[in-house]
Image (cartoon, rainbow over all chains, first blue to last red; front, side, top):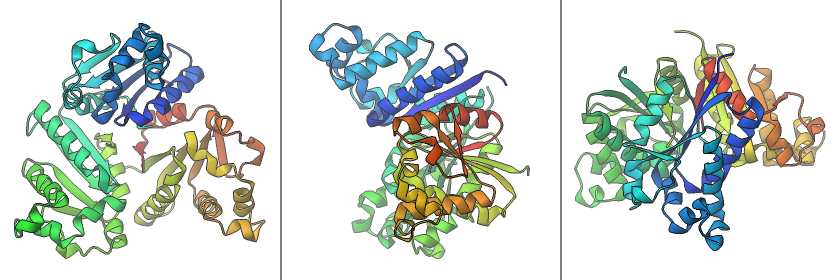
Length: 131
Length: 131
Length: 131
């Protein structure tokens, strides 16, 4: 079988934990490095990147922030990104949530439109999964 | 890159606004006329087409109706359809919601089964997106 | 047109009824035996298989159980499986819900990771649908 390519779409912040567990289970099953994985966040889901506390947590700069549920999610994303998972956010969504791109975690890539990214990846052979 | 082909699936009426914003952002990114876009509505999502007030709104026949939130959504669909977006509704769903096909907006195409349409389009190379 | 291949993804137990109605309408449209259909359940959706009462219902062993809403859903799945629909559950999800695999209905296949199954099937040409 060819190398699997998978795109996860998340547009509600309440689904992040499920997405990250799905990816962890998937990596555990196929083996780290044996699949191409991208996560595209648009809509309200990007709000997780908008809280200073989250970012402090993701950078390990604040104990009180780092212990929040959302900070923990961004920490999990960072670890997955170090395993090769690409995290992508939609610029329209970031603007809609008034999130400054300069404040985003380093592992996050911003694209002009999340839908274009999702369509392009599927055209490149990525499977689509909406957890 | 080849011309992008995208199918949006909506089966909950509460997701219509998100779908329409996604499409507007996508068109703004790739440019009108540069992608094939289809929206397939099944399940409870077709209820938006069942209110006489909505239809009045979509035809611009009633000021009081046209100002409702749902009437505004149908108006947005009409404008997107004029930009080339195809709107498709599932006959099973329309029957399930007791919606008379004769009362539907002109821009809406009815297919026997929404799932067949979704599967067929993906077989034709359309990306699937569930906002 | 080639034979349609469709994968339904369900990860919330509240969506089972919609999934099963979608499949019934789809089969009614294309004709039994004219499509390859698989349902992959992961996450919280597998909880439907964890209730002894449901299983009793699915096996027709308990009148009081068989009349529950969930028991009825498992009965519907069993009938669809007899029409050729494949039902697949994720082992990670079953473990997460503390469901013993020995207690599962006979028509259900267990895979190590639901996400791998979903990605693999799309790579084989299956359309993805998330009802």
